[in-house]
Image (tube, rainbow, N blue to C red; front, side, top):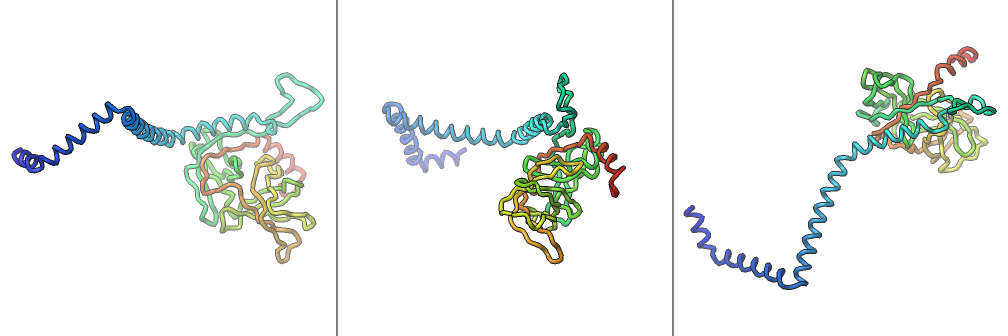
Length: 277
């Protein structure tokens, strides 16, 4: 305590200066309208900035929950889309639209593990058999195809990514409906290749590629990407096009699992008459 008093006494002029300076600022702010407004505005600006930072932080912390709610809402809307139903008879009207038979059902899920830098990539989802998830269900996003469920436990499931050398997908060029096969050949995770495009087809950079619907897993018309280049490879007679993928697989987060409710019926019928099915 004695040292404290000694320090204050030694620097008494400095502390007196600070006291007088504070008193002068207070008097100026109290009796002059301009200065008073200046101080108040400065305080409001500072307070506003603090509130903005706090609000942004709060928004960031709640973003995950907002994304989850948005995914659930999108799932509900996807299940209501008319393309998910087959028209069984166009010449009659049945109460409550039983004219339409549901074909596809959607469920949202979150990616909890994912890879893009391997030869064969997989991802893990936070839903499994308890939520109705099983093998051979498609996994999509709002920007394209994520992959295919290969196995599931009670509460988790693992999907084969489109970035897998064994994953092949029937696709088509949106402008003319020409069909081809899409496959990732490794390397750049933002590009895949579409094969078996007839050589008489006129291709243009920017042509949109979507799912063909020639699959028991994925509906028709899901965005895949755009054509950026093409060539006829040695020993082949068809074009192979480079497709810039619309989906950035490195940011895979919220997905939708699509189930074809009529898949087994279609496979059983085709297997009875088509060799190899």
